[in-house]
Length: 359
Image (cartoon, rainbow, N blue to C red; front, side, top):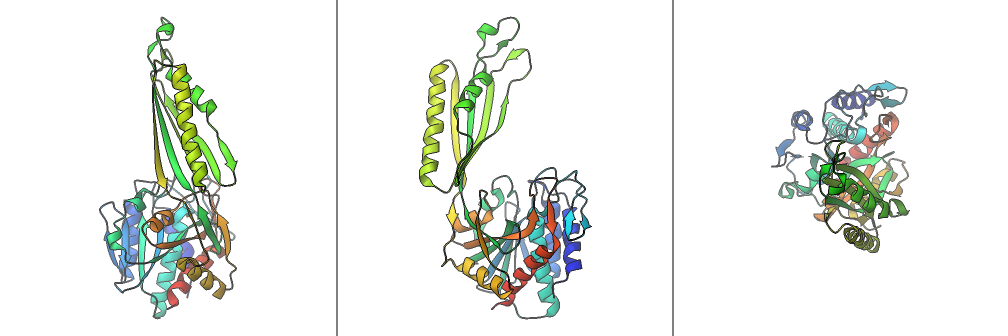
């Protein structure tokens, strides 16, 4: 039986464990201990991802990630009515500890009831928040499942991520020429000025319902009285349209060439890199069909919603695993206003349990 109080306590306990991206070790140790107590064999791959299994053939994979974003240290969760909230100085960490809690509660319930259940594998990854890094370095030789349910979506568990874009990051490195800003500025060539010329020529924001562009950071200069020699622009663009992605690649390249002509003495290097690839769920997708049928059996109506973000599900699909991402009761992700709705968290645990109870 899913126990609400135990589920909430599990969430609050693991929410208190600091686990910003790259610092997930204490979380991995905690979750590994919990799984071993439940009888699972746990393993760590070379990158530090946590994988567990009951050792039986033809399992389904349940997955969530171990890391959180900043500010995520010293989280102090509390229950207010039907919500779990932070004290307002940090995130809550529902992304993705709500998903982990739902999985753990389902496993505890099944073991407690002593019922037969579907063979299962578990994957808890590192550094998801900084570009699905853990999943991209996951040792897939440890995974035998052909279907995966990823508990990493926003909203109720009945909300299924219908599609996810391709994500392309770009780094534009500009080298100008340093000089004393007060004594001989005419001998300098400001890399920040060149960067501004590039940024004002780049598209930004939402271009259409499927495509976004953002310049996230600009870093340059050393002191206020020196003409800045080096500056780096970091940004991204996302789309489910191959045509739009190709067009943006060309546009960014053309902008760089255009600004190079304005400043022939500068050096400008442009690097583009794909972080994850797009997918759109189809009606005959095995994992999607499994989740929809199980939701309906619980009296929950599946809803399909596209996402502008990526999850480990993108990487699982690239590795031949039919994957579906479901909500985990979290709202206001990546903000200090984040909260988890307890009834929805209970529903997430019920879905996870029902998936495992279905042979």
